[in-house]
Image (cartoon, rainbow, N blue to C red):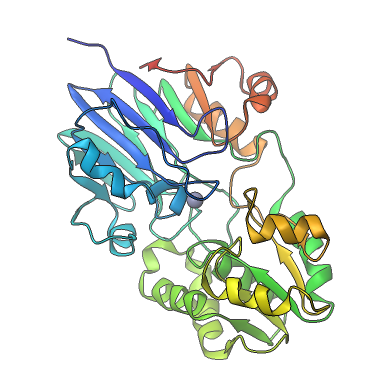
Length: 360
Ligand SMILES: [Zn+2]
């Protein structure tokens, strides 16, 4: 019988769509199937042949945007949490995974926990060989999305290291953004199913009442109040208050939060067209901006600023995970290969590699 192996199709060695294949217990299971960044970039799946299942960690485009490729992969069954399955870009019947607890994929025991990153998002531990952990995107710091630390031993861990060796805290991020919040009108382009509701919560808690949200962010907040499973317990009441107090975005006024994060779509796309040549409002992007996007262009021209709001782990979070689980091999995902030596130094004695396939 062939030995268990992890294939790194896309997302390791450079920023790109998430796509991996776990071959274990006689099954071939794809982990995530994203599109971009940059927009339009899809994983190269030609030659992979039919798969037995696709498992989705969360609903962000760089993890699910490649779903149209499924027909090239034999249309395997798709596994996701109910929250992620409900909001997929195309209608797919999803086999449910728990948002925390134990389930199974094609007979393989899978343990999941909340990833602190997106509504319904999870990390996944597969009970194969010495144990395999896929974190998907994760964060320990979110003030909105609950995070459950993985606890089961894993000899191999595929870990979101989007920020490489970066170490600033979310509190430091807020310190920088707060100086803009305290100024005049401010637009914060943000994904509705991620940072948007979280930034709104932080701004509410800072005492501001003039918060303006686009429809997508408002709808995301309403769903969060219903899907309390994804939320930190202490966030519920403030989110409910925010839904009551927030007003729609119209003129440059107060603190405005609108999707999408990079201005390629949604309300932000229109707002940037209206306001790009005006001096107000201030515009601050807080997430990854791919080359060629409006975010990239406005930052380069000086019209907008970039100030990160952490939604991925800091180096110390990854080090703590490695200390807790003691994997023999760690594969850092979603960062550039130039981060490898710094990560390897910090994560020893584990073998740290960006080269696949990796034996389990
Ligand atoms: Zn994500």
